[in-house]
Length: 340
Image 1 (cartoon, rainbow, N blue to C red):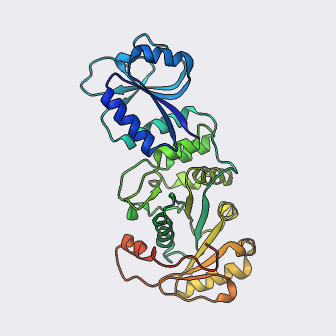
Image 2 (image 1 turned 120 degrees about the vertical axis):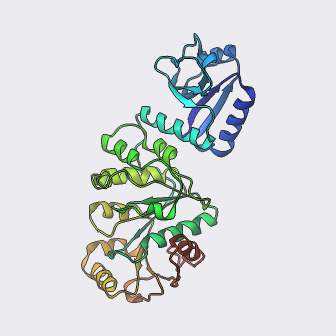
Image 3 (image 1 turned 90 degrees about the horizontal axis):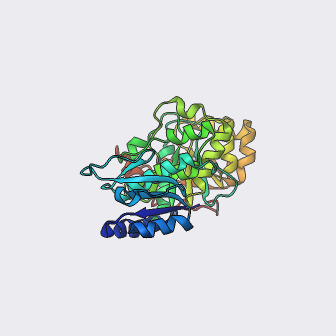
């Protein structure tokens, strides 16, 4: 969905710059309109309803704003006028991407619908292993980078109990805990909030979420919450890469069921081989996902093809720079036997 946003200010240059940037870079989320005079604004509000509006102080004096779900006061530090009662401020001079994120985040809290549903557009790839330390996150990001380089909109969702996101992404942003809170409380519009708080990444074309505020924020989510989270993310991107924990509980099964493909990551360690073999021979989940599963033999490992129809062999990259490793691996061939 797109929200209807009105920009009302007599600063014509600012209004044009802001509206043109939003129309060019945020068209998928926002439909923008502009008013530059009070008379035009008054007439517009008589005939139209808006989800949100960014309004300068002089424009809204004596104005009926009841047709706007979320009015926001465009505020500059050098302005001395008092904030009208009940209207939140939004800073005038900030990055436009940050302003858009702020509008979407605030509107998501007043919009009551929009939990996850079966109507989503993304291909979902789950990256999992029954063993820790196999390079699962590196593989997930390599696959994400490969999709991004092919021109896809890519979102990376880390569901590890202890997030490694700060190792790979350095930009500060909003914690994913805001989404968890909305899911747990069953209020607001999750998809809009996701659009608002996702971070654009480090120029690699991969959007992501900053780690939870607390360890338990992820653990308290129900299977239904996980479903809503995954499908809401999948509704606003083309490729969703889910980096899972190493457990295989009901929440993991929910993700496996939603996924179009599952990448099971292994390495050369004997403990990894034992755990993967045990999963394939003793766990009923394996039979349910076999057709969409590919084994990713990471760090130069080999694997038994008797267990899987598709095997992706990745080389060992000698580097202590985790970001350099996944970028190198993103050039590898992940498209094996049509699984990917």
